[in-house]
Image (cartoon, rainbow, N blue to C red):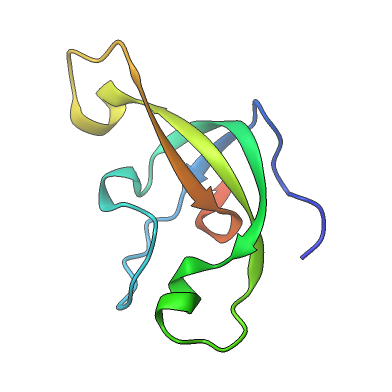
Length: 93
């Protein structure tokens, strides 16, 4: 995979797909909008590694922060950060 698609400060939306296999995209973060706060480099896609794929895709991984209130409701006032592979993300509109 080439250069990371997203940069620090980009707003992203997570996938809403509920795959029939392991995923590192937590259910509570699916379909949510967050902000990229760090680009972690590239790593093998954990979903494919867990499925026993001999050569899993290698993708950029991002630290994305979400307002806690958006995930779980009030009172909020703090953030939740999750490390997410690029294929879990799209541009937030």
